Length: 260
Image (cartoon, rainbow, N blue to C red; front, side, top):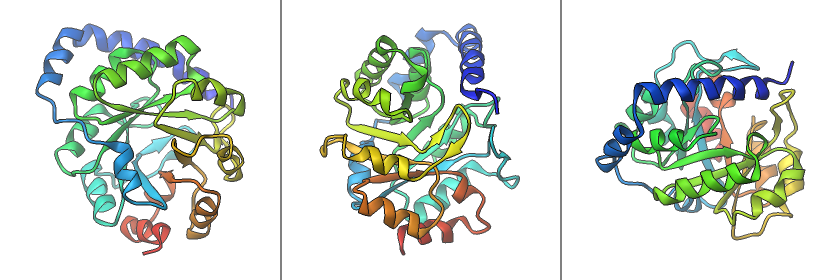
């Protein structure tokens, strides 16, 4: 597969420009004044120690195509929470993942756990959008951002009372991520440039991240044995999407991963 990450980022810049022309920053700031209060994403994961689950509401992906045809964002979210998910990740990218910002808005009205806006964030405007619909946390991908962008976007989220899950795949980005003094660091086991996955990748990087930073393993988690492997490797939380969305019984799969 070609470098899909680069393709996504080119499109995302156009998408943000279009969104700005539809809804002004001042209007988003007005909406934020009446948005639901921010909830503590990290604390919710810590309450589920030794392994908190960030369950992902994900209809499609560039690598898998359509993942689930019978898709109801709110019903899936409710099932996740009822079966033990600590937090939810909601895909809002429309072109490549068939997500929507409205899914996050609807889910916020349905469940009480903290929500992550899962998207390719490259502009502060997207953070304002996220907060206006009730997101508590955003994803920042180190591979998509230079040092200045990473710092500015991280501080923009903090300024709104939100948290940021700072994600990397390439170990070369770890030092620049840690310079943010982040509360949450995620290692994506999927190389977004070629869409190949290796569960061992996050375990190998775990020892290089200070223990007071909540560490999240992302992608490539399919079974209870995978979860136990992460737990043994001192990974604090896991972000799981396709494995859950492909399951005929989503609730049963959540319980299996959590050992319930």
